[in-house]
Length: 283
Image (tube, rainbow, N blue to C red; front, side, top):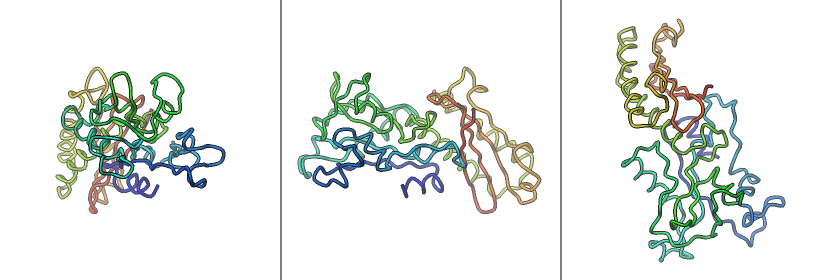
């Protein structure tokens, strides 16, 4: 919870990839919450103990803290775990590797669900995966990146953030927003010490438009045209007189991620203290 809050407040380009711990069956305070046993219904147990938290539409930036986290489950038996306790390795290392490789080869916004994991030959616990029925594993996969066997072998069956807010649930959307925020920050840093005025506003707007156009051409953004995929504003409509008097520049980006159902707005703010970023979802 502490890391989740810190990322959502101060490091909005980043996300946490973490392994959920194995509950110990011999410790009732850990293995059970109310009447829900972790071994029988892990999704229900995570909700009871507060690891999976409900998203809030009242978040000041619109992006719920859960969207900054991707959890991996269960623990894995792999070719590299033979010298580890219980022959198990936590899934976060493999999940991070799959996400990183995907970012380099296909683009970070593309889903990694369905990736075959040739090194995996078992897990603890072994999940019953159908991809259709309402099994505990299928329900867990709505908020957790689940590794389970299928007809094609062991693979990553879901690519999700821990958020239950629909536009932010897809793991690729959260990673895309991190990439866009990073590109916006870099564009802002390049203009940080320049005199604010129409010339700078137009130059920054063109820079951001070129960046978003590249995302759209790669398939990261929806829309039949670039105009449908994104808009960039940086003019007097995004800045008040108080902003201008205090040397504050504000640029607003609205994007339609290909996997989202709503348009998401990013605000880039340049002040004497540096570059700050905000993101909020809008209908």
